[in-house]
Structures are given as C-alpha cells and as structure tokens.
Amino acid sequence: MASTETTPVQDAGSVEAGLDALETTTTGRPPLRETLVDKVLPPVAAIAVVLVVWYILYPVVDDPSKLPSPGAVGSAFRDAWLRGELLGYIWTSVSRGLLGFAFALVIGTPLGLLVARVKFVRAAIGPILSGLQSLPSVAWVPPAVIWLGLNNSMMYAVILLGAVPSIANGLVSGVDQVPPLFLRAGRTMGATGAKGVWYVTLPASLPGYVAGLKQGWAFSWRSLMAAEIIAQFPDLGVGLGQLLENGRTASDMAMVFEAILLILFVGIAIDLLIFSPLERWVLRSRGLLVKS
Image (tube, rainbow, N blue to C red):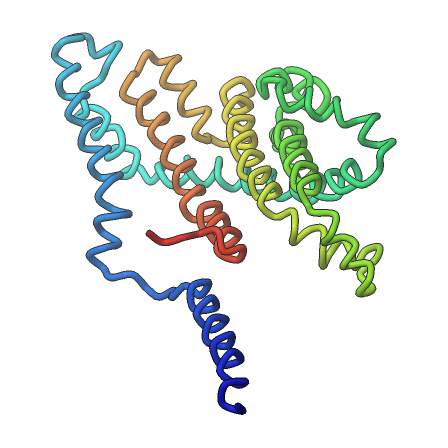
C-alpha cells in the first residue's frame, strides 16, 4: 500500500524534472565551422555578389564620372591610408556620433519614463515626440547653425534632436508592454517609487527600450552625416560626411564611393559590436532566443 502511494509522487517529480529539462537550453561556444558557416559566410557571399555586379555594370556604364571602377575606389582607400587620413575620417565622425548618442541616452531615458508614467505629460508632449521622430534630421541643421554657429555643439544639438525622440518613444513602448501583474507584484514586495522603476519597470521594458536605442543610434548617425555634409568649417575637422561632400564638390566619384562605403561600414560595425549582442542578451534572458 505504501509503495502504491509513493508512486504518483515519484511520477510527478519525474514529470516536473522532464519539464525543467525541456525548458533548460544548453548554451556553449558553437564550433568554429558552425560559426564560419552561419555568421561569416553569408556576409562574405553578399559582398562577393555586390562586387561581381559592380564589375559587370562598370563597363556597361562606361563613365567613371558616374560609376567608378572598384580599382579606383580601392586606390582612393589606399591613398587615404598612406596619407594617414583614413582613420582620422572615421574617428572624427564616430567620436562625435557616440558622444552625441550618450547625451541623447541620458536625456531620452528619463524623458521616456516621465512620458510613460505621467498621463498629463504623455498627453502634452507624447504627440510632439512622435512628430519630432518623423521629422527629417537634415531640417535641424540650418537652425542649429544659426543658434550655435559652426562648431561641435551644433553637431551634438542635431544628434540630440534626432535621437532623443526615438529613445524616449522606444522606452514608452516598452513600458506600455509591461504586464500589470509585474507592477503589482513589485509593489507587494516593496518595490515602489524609484525602486519599482529600477527593479521592475526598466528590466521588464528592455525589449522596447533596446529597439528604441537601436533606432536612436540610426537617427544619430544620419543626423550627424547630414550636419557634416551641410555645415563645414576647418576647425571641425574632416569627418565622413564632409569627405562625401568634398568628393561631390570635386566630381570625384571614387572619393564619393569611398565615403559611402565608410559610412556603411561604421553603421554595420556599431550594430554588430553593440546592438546585436545587446538584443541577443535581452532575448536570451527571456528565453526567446531558441537555437534550432
């Protein structure tokens, strides 16, 4: 009789253990071959396809002033490297972009929390933030030049006006998706006020917040490129946007393509080094990153 009474308990325990095993994912470093096939091969293949199409189109267009050859663009890269200017172009723009984005993060995060949690503030400035997010970044360059002059402060102002609305709206969207049960449970456990925001609201709203950060960086980078193209001054240095404008002014399509490729490279590198790992961490922490 005793043995028959304990059998269901053992079965329940084994079922629970089996469910736990199903929920547990083994995370380890993938093999090198798998990493090469899944991560390295696709972008390399895409680049190869673009180069092949480029080589095919160049003789068809047959006009270096409209489409430079890959060799001419490669020579532009080599000359800039030999002159010691290539890394300077990149650093001038990247340092401005990252610093401006950091400022936008400091401003946009509390603004997003305020809009998300205070109904009057949301009704007052929520539509304005959405409108600012849809406003082209280039529109802020002329007034910023008039207000602040041709200096780095003007660059940062344009970045802020482009990025802050995206960061704030992303956080608002994330907070709106937090289940009310989480908030009630936090209040029951004493997480109220600032503690509730830090330990409950922000962690639960991370998916929307990270999406807003990624979009905010995209707006930051585009805003900076627009500012560097339009507002040029010797004291500002030569960034990627000014390099692009210099190529247009000189009708040097090799330099234009050099600038475009560098702008694209920086955007991809920032995404791969910062935002993609951050997104994977958020998804993995919520059990949403399933390895097939």
